[in-house]
Amino acid sequence: MLTIDRLTKTYASGDTALREVTFQIPQGQVVGLIGPSGAGKSTLIRCINRLVEPSAGTVRLGETDLVPLRGRELRRARRRIGMIFQEYALVERLTVMENVLSGRLGYVPFWRSFTRRFPGQDIENAYRLLDRVGLLAHADKRADALSGGQRQRVGIARALAQDPELLLVDEPTASLDPKTSRQIMRLITEVCAERGLPAIVNIHDVPLAQRYLDRLIGLKAGQVVFDDAPDRLDDMT
Ligand code: ADP
Ligand code: ADP
Image: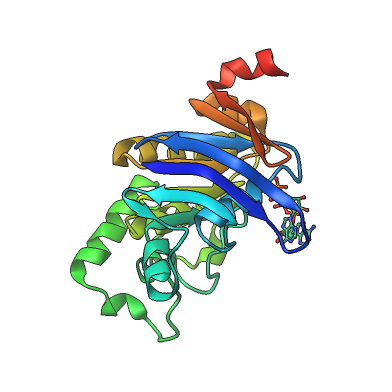
């Protein structure tokens, strides 16, 4: 469970990007984050994974408030958060399997053929994840040999390989065609439900979000202006 309470961010420039943002996400629920450019969506995601330091408020992941953490404790806490990116952020010259395993490390090792250095159970788990995302047959291909949809599937498997307690997903379908986008959204909601994993998906495509997600949070000028079932959105606008 993710609990965000009165989260506020004022940048050094004086811009207040978030004002007392408050919401909870229970296990297994995928929430779409929508709002116009400049609403504070990226700032919210970055305050949760602590690439940005919040000015006030709490971000609780399970029992841990992430806001006061520093140094080693912060790095450890960040490993509990899986990230999925618009442009996949794969290492192109590595294989699909190696990209997935790098999720367990949290970084990409410089040694060659690092697959062999992983415990057998990590390798087995990575194969299971590749099977789950439909890429088992591609495990030994280089990432740059894959289509966009396949790359995003690797991105999902990599995030899951770190066994996260929360997924943060930034515009996962922005570089994909409509059909592939639907497949990726379905996969994300399914794996979160299977694992009881809460997730936030920053998403521009509101119809796509309405189709696949049970709940949308709308931000405007740093404030939550909508938090409800997607079909209620029309009532508001
Ligand atoms: P969104 O992701 O919804 O487009 P952002 O979180 O990027 O919104 O931006 C929210 C507000 O915070 C905007 O007014 C933006 O100009 C400001 N902002 C974002 N990043 C920074 C930064 N690094 N320094 C100063 N202001 C920022
Ligand atoms: P997005 O498309 O994700 O909303 P933006 O174009 O808003 O991204 O921002 C791109 C980058 O510029 C981000 O790193 C953001 O933090 C930074 N940024 C946005 N607004 C400002 C600002 N007013 N001052 C400084 N940096 C900003």
